[in-house]
Image (tube, rainbow, N blue to C red; front, side, top):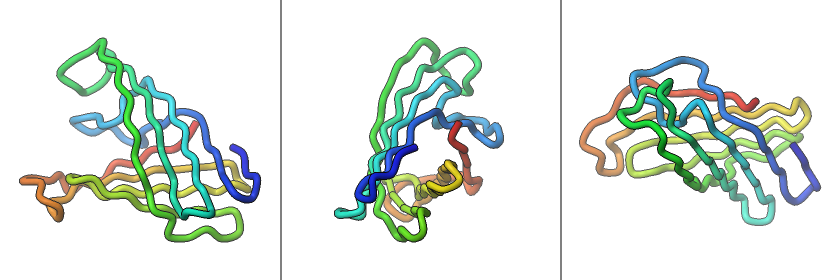
Length: 126
């Protein structure tokens, strides 16, 4: 984790806090989050490899995805950011001083998805 005053960079892997019937982030993953104070934005880049241990209908797949977040709070080395996809509400919380980060995702029908699972998923950075 690094902070030059203008940009915070977080790197590692997301570890799910609990197993759910369908994984949205695989066990084998690498993540980089860059938060930019000037634009109040965070970009999360995730690379994933689907293995037989993941709760997905395929294995051997390699994928990458980028999510954009809007910073809602950046105070005392703590960043909170939210992002929305058509089917999910997502949030990031980064504590630079403690060198911790977590990510939460909850499905929603608010932006056109037909169904949603009310359970949220939460990951911590390792």
